[in-house]
Structures are given as structure tokens and as C-alpha cells.
Length: 283
Ligand code: SIN
Image 1 (cartoon, rainbow, N blue to C red):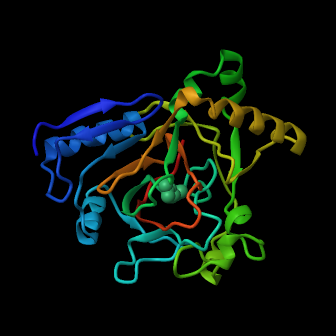
Image 2 (cartoon, protein in one colour):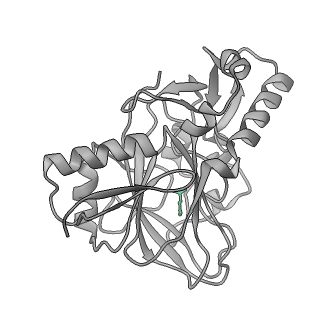
């Protein structure tokens, strides 16, 4: 491999070629990849051959690994969360627009997802650019959002007592509703429009899975504003559909994108290894 190349994709993201992620990256190459990550929101790699140790080493180059408190972990490598769906399961993980960890006071920077077992067809992941979503708002809406904050919580998705697969599934594929997780179900508040810590660009930071209200608004007003923003963010012009192949890797930035794992491969198995990297408080 050689000659690093970064090709922007329609909608969101860029494909990075000419790099072997199983090898240690020199500082110049790393800086170019980091710049692409910060500015495109999600970067994709093809034809990689990373074992678990390589995956962890690459992740640690970016920061501290977040050991997921809701997902089943790889049996040998706790840093690796399993994003799996077995043939008999009907629900999947991440099957709706969301951004990971917005329920944390310091939301995770992003995740590096490596394909391990893929269905014969289906199982794509959609990504949406929250930079583009913000930039396409009209000035009246940008002014309205200025200074607003939103409350985020994991309760709706991971909370105890929910009749969802998140609390029912354990090893073999899903998220687990354990005591440690229950202790971590606090509400947090973040700006509705953030300034990205790496690119310094503005991005919308609300998402349908974890944002529960706009601070300081009554429920009806908050629900209406959130639903208008979500409809705006789902514009296909801001999205890219990533089709996985053996050797594919997606590395997304939670502060600049949403994603959605399509659940259209019932009866087949899909196993992905996810490593999440810690982030920072958002402003
Ligand atoms: C996720 O982390 O939300 C899952 C993404 C995927 O499986 O494609």
C-alpha cells in the first residue's frame, strides 16, 4: 500500500485508500486521516485485514478506549463491543437514526466498526452529516437554535423494564440491561448546535434515539422543534449508504454524524466488532 488518498463521497463521508491500518501509521499519514475524519464526519476503508489486536492498536492511536457498559463484549478483548444479530433475532442494534453516547456528559468521540460476519445481502449502514444539516438551516432557525441546550438520556433505549431487545438479549448479540448500566442512566445536557472540537465547524447535535427534550421549552414546543429538526436531518442529500464487504471498516464521529444500521437480513448472521473512543465535553 502507499499513496494515501481521500475521496469524498456523496452525502457524507470519505473513502480513504492507500493505507494499511494493521501497520503503525506515521505521524503525517495519521494527521491526514484525522483531518478527513474531522471534516467528513465518517471515513471508510476497504480491503483491510485487522485482527483484534490490530483493531485495538489503531483505536488507541486516537485516544482512550471506552469499554461499553451496555453491549456484550468480545470474550477475549473487553475493549471490543459485539454488534451482532443472530439468524433467529428479529431486532438489531442501532436500527434507527442515532448518534452514540449522546447520553454521556462527555460523549464518545466515535467508533471504529470492523465487519467480521456479513449477510449475503443487506445489513448496510446509513450515515447522515450533521454539519450539512446545520449548514442547510435557514438563518431564522439558526438564530432560534443559538444558545439552546437539549437533554439526552439512555433510559428510553437501555433503561430497565423496557420491553425491548436491549434488555432481553445477552451474550450472542445484544445489549444488556445490567445494574452497572442502570446506574449510568443519568440525564445530561448538551448544546443543540455544537462547535466541533477538532474541525471547529458547527453541527446539529440532537438525535431521535437519545434526545428527550429541549431545555426551557414546554413538551409540545420541544417535541415540535425536535421533530422538525429530525425531518430536516433525514434529508437524503445529507446521507450516504455504506455497503459492507469483507475487510470494510467505518470510523464515524458522533459529534458530526448520525448512523442507522439497516435491519433487512432476517435469518442471516451479521457480526461487527466495535471499538469506541472517548470524547470530551461539548460546547
Ligand atoms: C451501531 O453502532 O449503531 C451499529 C452500526 C452497524 O452495525 O452498522
